[in-house]
Image 1: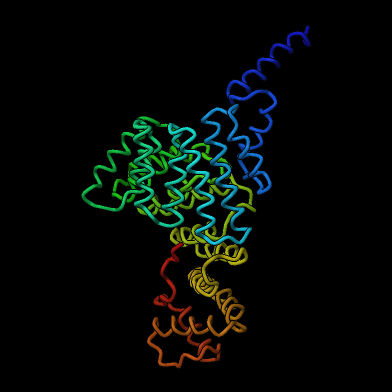
Image 2: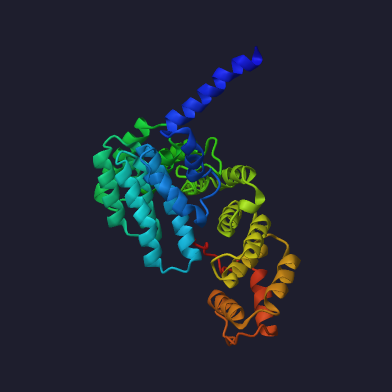
Length: 377
């Protein structure tokens, strides 16, 4: 009886898969593999086979668009590995984006993908807005495209109310869409609607996982947890900013954190008065090899250590950082100290006794303000 009862259920599951994907059983496996998973993108060798699947008459239009976007992601990474110029890689990538839009003009994510790539990678907001305008023409009630249109708008005080109103409508239309909430949260934040931003980011972080993707292979952007922390910081609630990022930290495997994430957490910890922990986060970032010059980060880390109350630790760190440092690093230190103290000591690029004495003196003073500007990412 159990076996007989299971057969219809199994057939039903197969039929549902076939109907939903719009393909025959022989194509179902190929379609599934071409759509990828939530944690990776297609390998380069899959591009041509999946292109054949996308072109097949047996594949539904929306599924074609989804595959083409997956191919765009794959081609983007393949172009880097193939050593293509930025222009050639972009042209190949966007050939798939154009195909996705043509396959199903009602599939909103194609326009969002195009706008995001132009605006974020090239900062060409005019082209990004064109894609969004085209998308809204085909999908006038799209909450995603409405939110993105407001997010990628060129800053203009006269249009601030219009963008805020556009986001109010998008959130009302799709209150549970995390991407809409995150994009509109940023719009609210930029236009001074801090409380609205806070509410939107809180909604966006509920159940957030790093491997959640709107488009397979593409990380959700912006990360709502960091946006939430930034909003708390603006409200003067630095401890809540740290608490937010600590929640995010618990949800992500340690090897998934980037150098920038450690730097941002470090800055918020310092803002909350936890200087030793801030310095530790900078150390983690330096080990990962951040994009910023390490010399800048070491200066900032040393400043945090000097504020931690442990002078011996700060002095030991100074020796470790600068005794055998390269000339550029020492030059930056000497210039920073000269600006902070008005010293007439020559800038030589050598960590000599005079430099060390000035550094120790500065570290021991509450008025020492070298390298106190937050690093921007």
